[in-house]
Image (cartoon, rainbow, N blue to C red):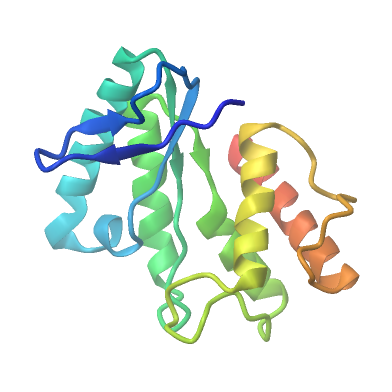
Length: 173
């Protein structure tokens, strides 16, 4: 896949790198707070719709990357998941359920460290889990048995691979 760097200009318009390369899929992600907070939820949905239309107009498929709850507010995932799934359904976009994978992993292994010390951003294990979820969701590749562990123990990598696969399969049904 060719890599195209996209960003937003001062008018909040999608801009791409200046070369003529095409891209077929754009993975959109917002912060965990935006779909969670009552004050910003409508803006989240508006931006998903607007940016999705721009992406489709340029011939690509928009996907949503569901973020995770903060480690000190695990209850956030119920609202985050509901709003990402709603946005996906309303805009005919598939959702990469990274947030649900985080929640499932922590329910199965409560001592697992998926966040950095700021309680919001992913640790190495959290990043690995999110990547496995992308692999399973976007590419439809079962991450279980993947030899790349990113420096995690084999046991931890296998666990996260399984969590990603199970979560993606469950959301697809």
